[in-house]
Amino acid sequence: MACPRLLTVEAMARVDAAAIAGGVPGMVLMRAAGAAVAARARAHLPPAGRVLVLCGPGNNGGDGFVAARLLQDAGYAVDLALLGERATLAGDAALAAAAWTGPVAEAAAADPSGCDLVIDALFGAGLSRDLAGAARTLVERINAAGRPVLAVDVPSGIDGNTGSPRGGAVRATETVTFVALKPGHLLQPGRAACGHLHIADIGTGAAALQAGLSACLPPLFRNGPDLWGAAFPRLSDASHKYTRGHALVLSGPVTRTGAARLAARGALRVGAGLVTVASPERALPENAAHLTAIMLRPCDGADDLDDLLTDARINAVLAGPGLGVGEATRDLVAVAAAAGRGLVLDADALTSFRGQARLLASHVADGGAGAVLTPHAGEFAKLFEGTDAVADVGKIEQARRASALSGAVVVMKGADTVITAPDGRAAINDHAAPWLGTAGSGDVLTGLIAGLLAQGMAPFEAAAAGVWLHGDAGLRHGPGLIAEDIPELMPPVLTGLLGALR
Image (cartoon, rainbow, N blue to C red):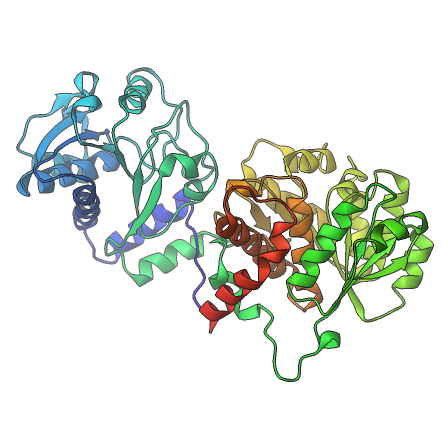
């Protein structure tokens, strides 16, 4: 099953260069790109509609000139405006401009409000500076006009590698990009600026794509079943509860037990054969009142946990939700890590190691635990404070540095969750919904990951699959979602997934 690789801006440049070196002229690639833009523009335009094509000074602008000519030949009313001087265009962009026979207006005079569609061909994914002056003013005017916008490659102003706006950015209705998606198409706020994403094949060829993929190492993926589906647990006629793993979830004290139960329910629903909540003695009645299929064992500290883990059938441990912050939690984590089982750490288990990421890393290394850390931005900043993981290097690089330092898979949660492994592999998840931003939702996510670890998935694949399943539940439910709904949505989520994987 082919994995959905993403290309950085630099890797995409390698694709173009390899295609040209392999005998495909750059102008052929530009014509194909412009034709793809024109085809998508026609899908947005009424018959004989009016389109404003805004071209920039580079190859992105050249794509715009090609699209403008094709749309004019197809009978649409086309206005074209150029940011910069036509005389300064070079290479293929100059050739594309020479083939345009219509007038070329100054961008400052363009009126986006008077057209049915704006084609944004100003700047591509490789923009290397912040927008300022006339360029920024034009972007603001496009956004203020409220007209549908078709962006070429990326909305102008979006950094193709990080998704960050460079001084401002166009808000597009749709974005046409070429060969493969770039990280900035999926990372926020770039993803929101892109609108619908359309990938066009422009004839670079398989060899050129492989050159780009080879330049984009360690690999970067769009999260989805193509990435981890081959490793996803499947039942056979011989399966039973003892072949499906046993997850142990550590509970917090009285009045703080709900998060652990949410996580435990997630682990059970995703397929773990057995799930046990390890509860402080005083919280046993509180947990017992809510648990049925999930087992319950007393656990008042690290020594009790050590005793519980003498049961070799327990092969995944989840610690953090509602557990409490401090030395007692650090001790529990140390014992769990030393046991060498699958390990998921979230919330209080992470905050208890504030500024002590290297200490946590030593615990993970001591037991050889297959560990997954699931911080949101605030927890990430606390855990990794004082390290280069919190430098302003973009979300992917931050998470990669955190994985390398901790020796664990890191799930850096958010609207654009990033999953990274210590070997540098990374995936961006865009299969999710805003309804998931509710109390307890992250606790269920940790349970899904723990349940997949218990069933034998490797940490990176378990984390990526758990994030996708969690997102799919949110997409299926829609508005009004609460955390308790997520485990109960797993049957249709899993049915749909397993049907697609056949």
